[in-house]
Figure 1 (cartoon, helix red, strand yellow):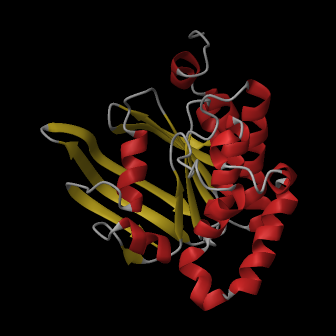
Figure 2 (spheres, helix red, strand yellow):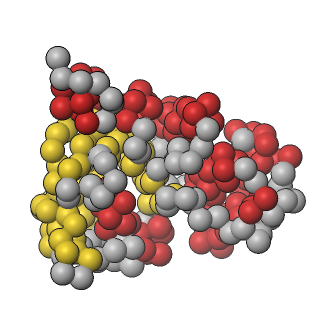
Figure 3 (cartoon, rainbow, N blue to C red):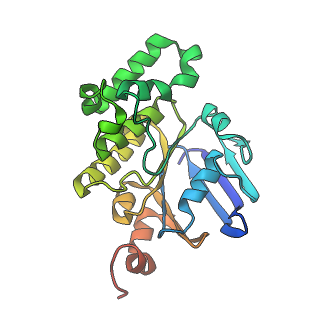
Length: 245
């Protein structure tokens, strides 16, 4: 296992008077795929938003690549090497596929140069051939699965050390959802990108993950390797649709 790239300690978060996260502790090492599992309302998306700077933590700390980033604005977190693909993708529906991809690399343009970015966009097209075929289409005209590929491709163009994925299979047909989760594994295996994955499809997420944390009403109920989590009777009952033995 590589060095710790993300460390969350005693993190709490609120929406107004309602406390959503209660002292969350987790860590992710370089080269891992780590899943956050849990029912709707467990606090998974809030936790991702606190990590990437979209929501302010009330207490606790977030360390990324050796630096505390707890209250750093989201745009600065991106520049430090973290990318976030939010729930429901949030691509720019009135821009072309290619323009969406260019935006993913926009903060690197001055340093990397146009030619390097063009080569990197071509690498995205090689991985997602359908995006090359549709590169002049408006993002909003793509299917849900194609939009998710575009959102992932756009995030990869920021050259992240850590990729946060929030419900990438949400609303997709089962075969497409399976393909998207396989892509998550390829991102780690072929691109070397560390991934923190929020996913309600527990079976699919655990199949591609090294480790997982199970959240319940804003607390970590369980943590362990994917094999340990998938064999836990509480997880089988609550998330995998199996009754207690």
